Image (cartoon, rainbow, N blue to C red; front, top):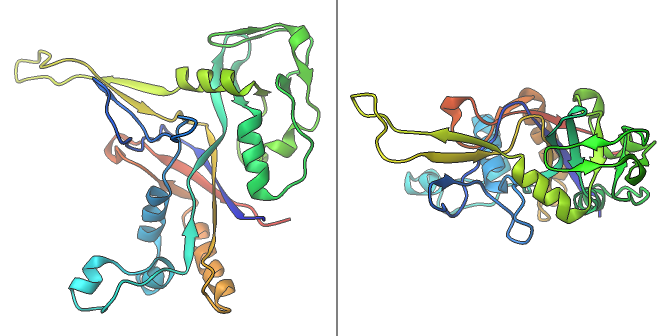
Length: 267
């Protein structure tokens, strides 16, 4: 099956609240089976719903409890479109040898491939666009040149390549990629000051997905449209076109969550 896909290129750190808070760490939403960061579909849906004109809002996204309580509608209704979770594809990590390198892993690439319906050759770990003539120094690892494999068709695995600055890519084994993503998350230390400008309480750390990360989410229409799917998709495409820059997640007053939205047509 092939889904419609929308891409999110993060312009600033993005924070979506997690279900738990451990100690003084304010975490972000994570997948239960991989513990990798993601954007819940409800967060994306809420942002898109708020960006939809009032004339189309209830038809595309369904009505609300407030509509029913206010007498505008008698029952809750389902919208005509749906959106999925925002998933990681390429994550920037610091490199002592190349400045910034974008990493991914076979699991993340294969997930994207399944959703897009493309038939691309499997990518082996340590494939890179940087060649194999010198080592790569990452934040917490050194990859020797004889470990690396040249990757000539890497652009096929980097959607919206021309709209981003992603050109230094590296595929790592699943477990190593997860560890490096975890250590490369944006973490900000916060303190509370009293009227005497002294620290009140302890430090607090807030996590966020780093800027320049490339994410994506599937979207489409619900099954019970009876011929109205084309109109619904066109209306949602109009929303995408009207808001090429969105602000998603929390901490809006701190400039968090600005993303570039790009929707690519099916090939």
